[in-house]
Length: 333
Image 1 (cartoon, rainbow, N blue to C red):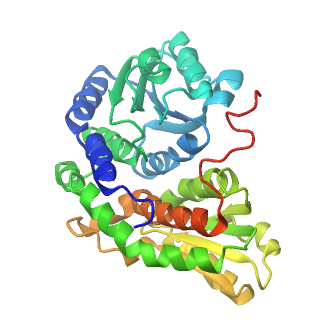
Image 2 (cartoon, rainbow, N blue to C red; image 1 turned 45 degrees about the horizontal axis):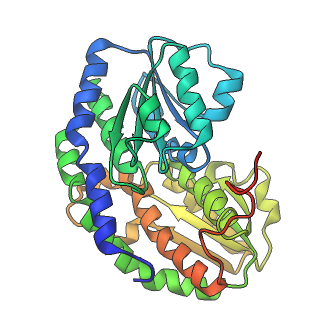
């Protein structure tokens, strides 16, 4: 597979899943002590990656759980932020400035701060009250966030089958390697067909809306300098659909939660207008060893794996490195 280091991928993923005992101990302690608000704090991609877990809590729990933008939290504040707040942060590098400052801000208000990162000596790790550390460069953080949120909901009596789910999740690194293998020819074909496409229209919903936002902004825009429009499938018929034309590249991310019909509806309309509609559907991947009732929870992980293959092939056909930046961490701002 193009640009895929299988041993490294397996080791990084396994290191995240191996945090289960620490995550369980932490969650159990927090529940026993009691808290009222959970803030999932991020910046850019790590903010978008929090949305599936806000979505999970919103549909399953009475606990106040919100995804918030680190920089906005600092300047706007939050009336419910205080000693009964738990704030969770993630950072691949451990040095994301907005997140570092947000940790300081949350602690100044009395909140208990948790960080997930791959660098134990980084500011995101050392400034938080507790850091749970995986191998360097481990991405995405869905492994850890899935364990954290499902354990939390289970302790509150709002999630059934946690032990079985967490046990099955231990096999996800190998499962995702098989997903990558299956996606490789699909990714190559998409890249070849779209090597000269300079605009993509992305649609997703439910627990895939965060990934839709992330892939549009952080990959296609930031890493490939391509213009995009991204819209939630539930909001598709309220403005953005007017941008569709016969040759518009439409990318649809389809999952397996209760919002699937909303994305189906958007896809049906898009196909009436555009002749270039591509659907990446998690149902296409077997996920051997995962119970049917848990598949929907894994949709962000599955599509991250699939679309990482697409990203590598776009990098190849467009001769545009995924590491190339003009402004991000290049210029002061």
